[in-house]
Image 1 (cartoon, chains in turn cyan, red):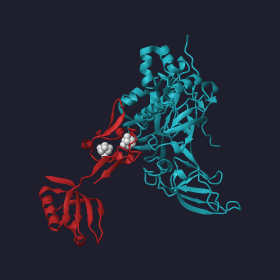
Image 2 (spheres, chains in turn blue, brown; image 1 turned 120 degrees about the vertical axis):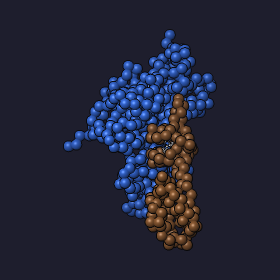
Image 3 (cartoon, chains in turn brown, yellow; image 1 turned 90 degrees about the vertical axis):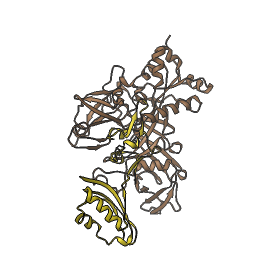
Amino acid sequence: MSVTKTYEEINEKIKKGKVVVVTAEEVIDIAAKEGIKKAAAKVDVVTTGTFGPMCSSGAFLNFGHSKPKIKMQKVWLNGIPAYGGIAAVDAYIGATEVAEDDPCNKVHPGSFSYGGGHVIEDLVAGKPIQLETTAYGTDCYPRRKLETTITIDDLNNALLFNPRNAYQNYNVGINTTKKTIYTYMGVLKPNMCNANYSSAGQLSPLMNDPYYRTIGIGTRIFLAGGTGYVAWHGTQHSPSEERTEKGVPTGGAGTLAVMGDLKQMNSGFLRGVSILGYGASLAVGVGIPIPILNEEILEFTTVRDEEIFAPVVDYGTSYPNAEPGNLGLVSYAQLKSGKITINGKEVKTAPISSYPKARQIAETLKQWILNGKFYLTQPAQLLPSVEDDIKIKPLVIK
Amino acid sequence: MTVSKKVVLRFDAKIVDQPIMYSLIKDYGLIPNILKAEINPHKQGYLVLELSGENQKYAEGMEYLNSLGISVDALDEKVVWLEDRCMQCGVCTGLCPTQALSMNRPSMEVSFDGEKCIVCEMCLKSCPAKAVELRF
Ligand code: SF4
Ligand code: SF4
């Protein structure tokens, strides 16, 4: 008889302290030793994790009303503009925003030492933040200007809302030109001297549920040290990418929009970053529990770095010019070894996402579930998958 | 034989009007390349120089500086790795030319060995978490 479990049954086991939870690394050995069937019967939840710069991140903040009131049309936090074009005293601070007087890339490569991601990190760390705001006056909101300091505790609401996180897979960046380039994939030296990648591979959430059979809207997750939720499929979610026999996409593919209470988070898993010559961003930690509802789902979680492939993309030529094609596929096992071979040349590799942090996240989530602090949720709706035939369109200039 | 050394000169306010650079060049044939300077007519100042020249002349030039009461120290620039700030991404390990910053496999944890560091400053510029610092 094949194994089937429901969310209710798994949650009941969590409640009784009888749940079996392992990480996406640990499940590989268990399945290899005991076989898929036995492993699926034994394991109830597999935890995953990823930690890396995720530019499509930011936070909605509510400051409360001053006396007299102000609309907060324009908002700055530590000098970084936040978007105030929503209701009075609400604003959205985006991870990649920089100060209006930031030299950016005027002296190339720019250092982008402080941006929206750093404001979010400082907020989470409890540091005081300078708030400056202006507005046109109205009869209901007469004040036109205000300057003060706030901390996260002063805010009524602080909601991390990231429209595109946790990319299922990603490019490996390389540079075939004769000049060093500065990209969001890091510093890429000329003549293919180095290559950077950005995924936790076998530990990464969407690698372990490649067709999104369990992850959907309302899935409760680990988000930057707190609990959060999957809000929607992420922007540019593209399930129809090419896939290996085992269903793992060989390019970007799925993404998640995630949200959670910033007040629960901790700066160990939410870090402002400065990417030389590129910009400011936010490194985010995401961990997702995968309920082992049946054998097939368990089998998906046994995916290993050797079986996950990423395309090597030239960020010196084809990428910026939106030209298709790549220099071949390499596995995460090769990438993690520190070198790959491209066109017969040995190339040094380095990650821009953190594997040790990904492991720490999967482990933390496992402990939360084992200790009955975290229950699984059944999604209200699953994410669009291959059968939905989503195509990501380029922008056509008319 | 020629030498080339990075040195820090520290001097008192009262000698800032001395033509030190001029003397080093003209009287001792040394080539100073100023890397960093802080000179203030009312306070102590310092100069970070890369000084090169012929061995014997170099020694004489040092004596000249000492006779003016200028202290000359070897530049002790050091890269320090702030483990607490490091987010263990590993991107520096692809750029560090000497493996001073390196990845331990299979744990994929990054560690720093100051002995191997040649202070090329590659990590300093490229670390996204600003987890490396230069100290004098
Ligand atoms: S680049 Fe910076 S944060 Fe990343 S591993 Fe190196 S020192 Fe740590
Ligand atoms: S300064 Fe250069 S040699 Fe020293 S750790 Fe950084 S990259 Fe490596």
